[in-house]
Length: 462
Ligand code: RNT
Ligand code: ZN
Image 1: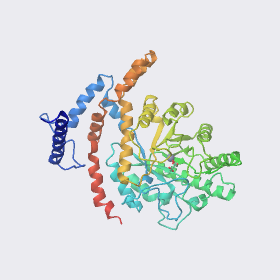
Image 2: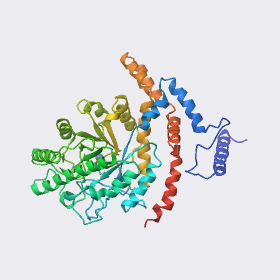
Image 3: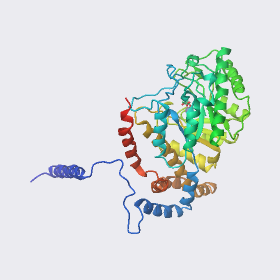
Image 4: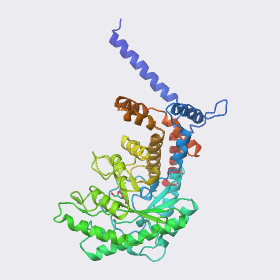
């Protein structure tokens, strides 16, 4: 007789064998498989049927998901051009990236020309539901005529971007580029002790705001021009005050000219530290918070720019106590400001909840900021943008009113219970339906399009 142990092992081997056999029988993995295909007798796709059930479930929580989707469709996310080419730009100045920025990875197929970048971007947005924007950096200027330096940039250097954006009905946002340039190699720009260097960068700042206004005028959608500088020091400075004093003066010079906010609005982005600016960053969070409030600028909160135990989500209602509008650079720092692709993390959901539950959505310019060169770059855009929208959808469809009522009544038990139950509501069915309705692949089926594009387009780039 076999011992029970031998029998158990035998059963396990048999079971394992079955699993292996079963796997072999399945159709080959096809990331492009369309999950909307199964249609029932009433002519409804499985996505529509799943949505119907999900809608009832949310209705029982007092949430109308049709209204949620209408609100979500109004959200426009500004997608950063620099994910498409590892913050390369088209100036070909030969300067290294610098500014404490670092892109790792060498996935093949990076966009090498403005045309390729635009084509990749179009592929990405065809896989993201909603109408979104493109966020350009000054170093993406196209020098079709004589080359000019950054203090001489003009809207004409972006005429192809403007014409393209117009034809695709896209809004454009903009950023001054204070890195990857010989005059930024010391790690100082607007706070530099040398007046001539400061003047050069002040002029760049002014030019970019004018270019932003030209975007706004041409496209009929106000441009956000975001100012971030790398200025800081690797080791402890002897005079923290002097750099901040100069930065304040330089910024006032950059922003001296009034520009119609219908054309361009400005924002300032602070940071905790960077590579080579570990001990001191001139434009810190406090510096820019004060600047934004006193000068009536937007404050950009980059979610990678704080101490890892700080919550950017918690800052939203704090800064909105003083600011009418803010901007976001949604990013994912892993152990540091590593700019990983945005995932549907607890932090992202917390951020989306603050925006939605605080009723700040219409007062926030949401942008993404990460750069991953180790995976397909189009997929990186799509994954991050879809996650941002999913997080917003979850916040919009959550039974926030019920949870708040529990809090007001002092019933923290129910608050916690409901917050946890909320996590398993059928958001996925609502998201799939949203994509389906928007004519964009639902579920993972967008991946097939990216793989096809990689095979047909990206792999042809030497
Ligand atoms: C850098 C800032 C800044 C840049 C872009 C490229 O830490 O986040 O926004 O990422 O300007
Ligand atoms: Zn940023």
